[in-house]
Length: 253
Image (cartoon, rainbow, N blue to C red; front, top):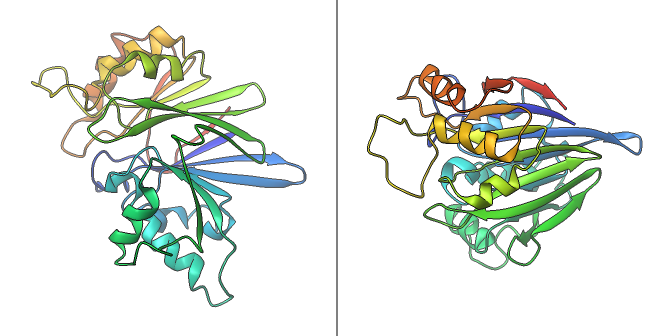
């Protein structure tokens, strides 16, 4: 399994990266399968530097804040109105209300909305799934809207993406023994942070340590914060391999 960071900026696109989007690729049955974890603001443009987006097999959304899902509107246009004809529908997993919220964002009636282009599936109804070689589970975490950590495996290799979450036992379990834990670190320890919203770098490190994650990659750091701060905080709580996400970075599992 290969992870390519498409977008890793926190809460809004930054000068060096679009918002949340991560490409996972794995070979299976004679071809390369591709899924996206999130497709936030600006990510569809950057994605085209790496692959033809029409080759994406599925999208898994962590939650419905715009920095994690809004470029599905552009993806809808690309797949629906391509000069070569409409692309076949692909699965899009997300929280309850995903189809309705995206239709409203694009100014469509709820029915059919984007349903001819995307096969919407809800985590409350289907908290686990299979796409080609990828198996995944979605675990609800703490955030102001329904939000999910995504645990994806190919064979014995496991990647966990925190999505947006405050510290909670559910996130520790989602990251349990993960080969790579892609964890948001939006807050700083020095600030008076609201509860149940985001992780600090230290809390990301503490979660990785408690979960026994083998490799921690920090992401979703807003442009107004220094990424060195998040890394320094995480290193104080986690002694394993640690990296910070950047657009274009590749990690092979």
